[in-house]
Amino acid sequence: MMRLSSHIRHAVLAALIGGASFSAPALVAPAAAAVNNQEPGPFVDTLADEGFAVLRTGNRAAARTQFRTLLSQYFSVDTIGDRLIRSWRAKITPAQYSAYKAAFPNFIIGTYADRLFDYAKADLKVVRTVPSGTSAAVMTQVTKPGSSPLNAVWTVDKVGGGYKVSNLTVAGVNLAVTQAADFDAYIRRNGFDKLVAFMKSRG
Image 1 (cartoon, rainbow, N blue to C red):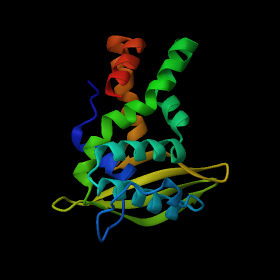
Image 2: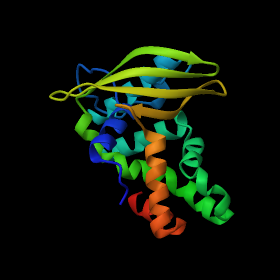
Image 3: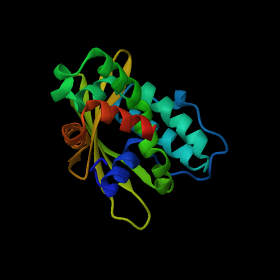
């Protein structure tokens, strides 16, 4: 099993594909084209809107489809995936690497999509943005009714004509560092092929 605690998993994903307040539930999944990725702050804000809008429908199949679209369009999936196995990259074969890359997006969706419904009534607010070259740190706060607010910092990078998410830190926990440690521990115990098999089973 991956060791990342359920509390942090839920908080991370609420911030990853969270959203702003809604006056009424959406009837259908909104189009990901509504995301404005031209400036860091609006990018995170509108990406969050899209994620929570589909959660409000209560349609889990539609949510998985929408999250897959958001992930492929607005997250640096290859960069994130490579970072998680950086210490193993030179030790695995091209075939193993290809299998890992193929399994990674489905692993993310399969692991987290259903759990996001716990955050359908949450609110994500952009607090401030700190630019750094072609990247930026977008400070946000995630509020769920009945729970204490969580601070989440999104790292976004300029890629082509827009921004993409490359990392996230929630309540001081760096998602990439934590998940990389989980993967590393799993590989040491079971081997790289078993990690890929585990990822496929979650997808």
